[in-house]
Amino acid sequence: MATTKELIEQINRLFTENRMEAFMDYLAEDVVWDMYTASSGRTTFNGKAELSQMDGSDMPEHTNFQFSTIVIEGDRASVQGLSTNKKADGTEYESNFCDIYQFKDDKVVRMGSYVVDNIK
Image (cartoon, rainbow, N blue to C red; front, side, top):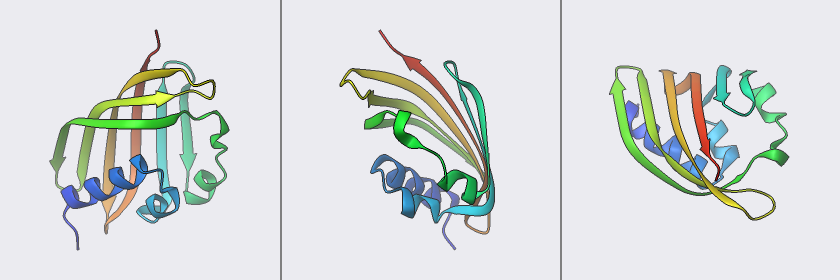
């Protein structure tokens, strides 16, 4: 059984490398993922099946992630950082983010993502 820190490192590495199929392997079948952004408000995905149907065509390309803080307590963890993103038109911008995870049996059962885009 991996430690929570090891799980966080593995999950975030897969996400930053855009290896979504492998990333999804770390999610429970009934995972709930709440995403909060200033531009689109709250979006909730219920279950891996719903997440796999997500149309990522309007998602930016993530070109860099920097993790500034990782806090772990038991089966919960949070990751704070800064990402550099690229829009479809090539414009780059930064986003501050905080992801909060809850684990059960080495799988993410709940996740909250808070993102603030710094578009100039």
